Amino acid sequence: RYLCHTDNLLKLSSVFYILQIFLQDSTKNEPSRWRNFSTCAIVKCRTGGGRVMSNYGIFRIKKYDGGAVRGIEKHVQREASSSRTNPDIDYARSSKNYNLHNRYQGTYKQAIEKRLRECGIEKVRKNGVQMVELLFTASHDFFKDKTDDEIRQYFQDCYNWACSKYGIENIITAQVHLDEYTPHMHLEFIPICRNKLNARELFKRPLTEIQNEVYKNVFKNYGLERGESIE
Image 1 (tube, rainbow, N blue to C red):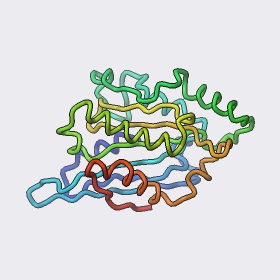
Image 2: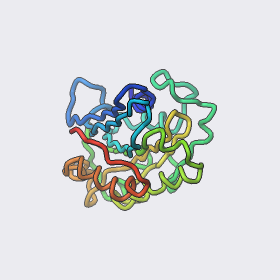
Image 3: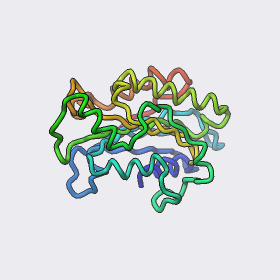
Image 4: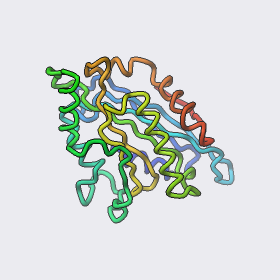
């Protein structure tokens, strides 16, 4: 589950590579951390000889209520020494991970509470979205010939776009993981809109429009393809 799906799919040697992300605004029968998250499918084709024709930028959005925040923090910050749900993590390489956003050193919950106080927000719905995760990555082959500095710059550009889009003051962390099969970045932020906690307002536009923005402002600059979206 969760991120291990991303890496496992990127390692498949079949004709199509598919990254699936789902949109469920209210799934009462699912655990809270799986509620209300958005996604698309990105498909890569191989030639008959097995050569990848193109590399694709990959962007995912997930929304979490307050009850899910701690579990996500444990995964992103690598607080455990092993994982039953993601065997792809190589904890011997976890020291190579880094955070592009070092403005706040407390826990995710503390960061959320601090930002809510700054905005004068006192009441929060128990099942309301308190944190949104943006996951940025690309086809595995895209990173193969990149230096560490080039990989960092790619994620820096993704981070800069997110800061301009959702406000640097609302970002909790931007953790780059290099200890799995494909480098990727988890960017967690608080969905503040007009001094209100309002993820619905922030993401009322079709997901494809947001994906197009990321493509035009980041992915296209690296020669990555847009891919196909399924909502």
